[in-house]
Image (cartoon, rainbow, N blue to C red; front, top):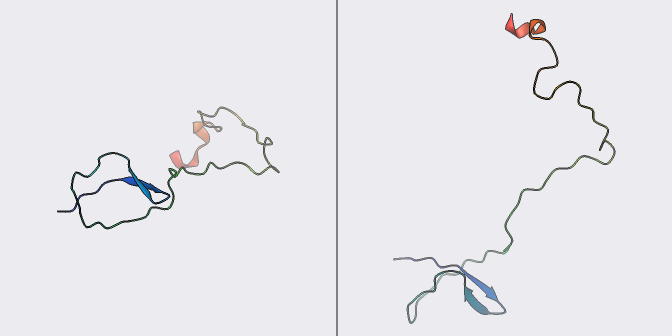
Length: 74
């Protein structure tokens, strides 16, 4: 039966992160995960050319146009 254990290898030394295997010897398969840092989505920012130039017209929650003027509701 295959069991998985997480470890970090630094300078050829293995450091177990959680559980350490309890066997005397075993045949292992090693999978290398190159990036150790967690992947966070990149935050988008406005171009410096347009940053700070936007205006909010009207209320952000309510519609800008009266419901009577909505063609799709007729």
